[in-house]
Image 1 (cartoon, helix red, strand yellow):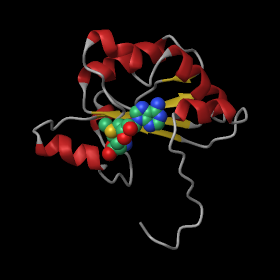
Image 2 (cartoon, helix red, strand yellow):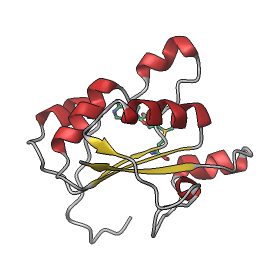
Image 3 (cartoon, helix red, strand yellow):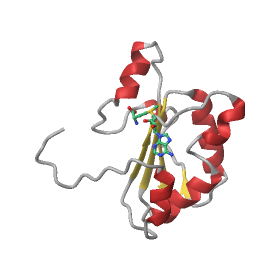
Image 4 (cartoon, protein in one colour):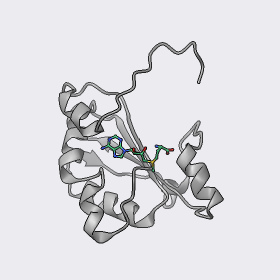
Length: 132
Ligand SMILES: C[S@@+](CC[C@H](N)C(=O)[O-])C[C@H]1O[C@@H](n2cnc3c(N)ncnc32)[C@H](O)[C@@H]1O
């Protein structure tokens, strides 16, 4: 990372706690990149995407602004879509079928994505949801 960057802040605790402190409609965009998938059914409740966190994410995003969610785990992609469809504050309107497999403009693979590719998980989901 360039040492010249002066507008980076790190928060090293639970991101949900930070979300709850942010003012309404204060963010232009949110990225949730490769969150822990918690593959076992009994652990799904630990996934970051939930009705509670989606409400908070919607609250802090400005109207019309994007929430980017990327994962290589199909079950987490389906989980997230199902929850988004239950959250009227978010709109999912892809430009064409399969658009969600195309990386975002200017995308740089994260460390986790590179690991996934090395381990043979070649397909990712790059969802863009917009604040209604
Ligand atoms: C699979 S890794 C992906 C890391 C990185 N986004 C990437 O793509 O390389 C998931 C990361 O989310 C962090 N994490 C899990 N739950 C979190 C939470 N509630 N708040 C903040 N970070 C969390 C974990 O510590 C871990 O570093």
